[in-house]
Image 1 (cartoon, rainbow, N blue to C red):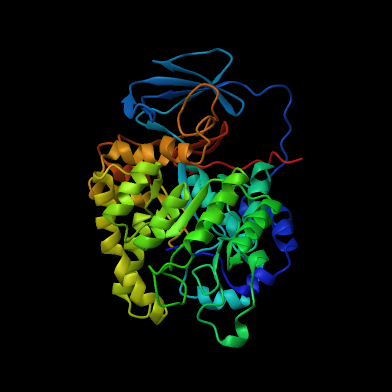
Image 2 (spheres, helix red, strand yellow):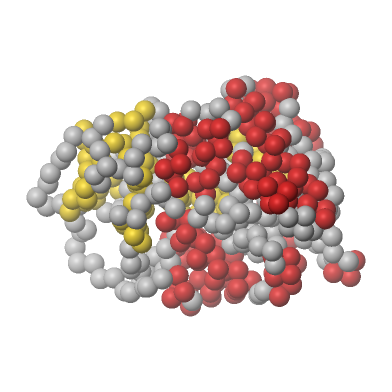
Amino acid sequence: MAVGRLSTVRRRAARSFALLAGCALVSLAGPVTAQAQDGPPKPVVLHCPALLDSVAGKMLGPTSVVIQGERVVEVVPGTVTRADAEVVDLAGETCLPGLIDAHVHISSEFSPTVYSDMLHFNLADWVVRSTVWAKRTLLGGFTTVRNLGDSHYETVALRDQINKGWVPGPRILTAGPAIGSTGGHADDGDGLRMDLQPDVGAHDSIINGTADAWKAVREHYKQNVDTIKIMTTGGVLDLSGSVDNSQLTEEETKALVTAAHEYGYIVGVHAHGAEGIRRAVVAGADSIEHGTFMDAQDMKLMKEHGTYYVPTIYTGTYVTEKAKGNPHAYPPAVQAKALLVGPQLMKTVGDAYKAGVKFAYGTDAGVYPHGENWKDFPLLVQVGMPAIYTLQMATINAATLLKKDKDIGSVAAGKYADIVAVPGDPTKDITLMGKVDFVMKGGIVFKKGGAEQVFTSTAH
């Protein structure tokens, strides 16, 4: 699917917009006041009537989680009381580790005007909006996201400003711009008249050959990204005609993955077509995103290589239903592709689960509205996954894929105090994942009793 990078107009916008907007315009993200802290923070004890043990894949009974600062220090069965601690009683709730979405586009969001917006908005416009989308994502219970594609490294700036406490949002692991080939899904010139098609190269994340592949990865390293995203096949929302044709050679794919791993990055691969999936898996990619036309050979190879599948299942259904409901929902080339993917993706995900492929949760949010990241859960259950496995996908599985399982993905001593809660048992009613009413990230409560808490900046 993939929103991918937006227009060349955005790419050419001054890079300083991204740096300035995150700092100077924080008031648009909600109330912000300076915070003074005298001495160590007071311990917090969460009383959870039920707690998901994401590692064991089971629900625990009443449990107390003791938190000091941004980390969990103790997880104790039953109800613990401490005179020196603030107690948060989550009666009637099920507690879960902070949710992880391994595939978002947090600095863009599709709308009926998005193609014209690309010509009129500056990068700063998207950056300011991204602060709102980041907060919506966090309040939906997703305390960590992997951003797989932006325009000009603006999500590096967003990540940094969130980490510094200027604006509220999830932990972001960002890939910067996705890397693809000339005329491919990452090429913003697709579908434009010739005088608007730029001559782009590795510096712009467009490669042709293995030398370009190494240069593009090195440029991403220079810009301080956390991960790498590559495009081995066509996609839905670009203005070209194919969703599944291969767009990187075996040699180019191998070079990109090898270079990324050399620099310590995990690699997520946008791939709809079976051959593009095969090339990515054989090259050693860490995850396949979308995988719409994955075949039995691909599934076998993914099991052999330990490759994760991030299916973005709701996005497939979303674009298909939108195209069915409105013949003018998308430009003609996009409309035709959108009608193909939904039903096929539902079948593929069910088949891959039965085949024993490993899954991590990812949504492609940005294709549909941010904050609705929970909507993949019901469809995953619909194709045959146990509800508790879908919760593992969005916690320990995603954390393991991202190589962050020492810090996130489960509620355990030493890990970040990233904890969310829903009113009831989501293993019995998975739609409760759309009703997250308590959100704690790094020991700070952002939502309680269903109400957003006033954000207090921790920046200095």
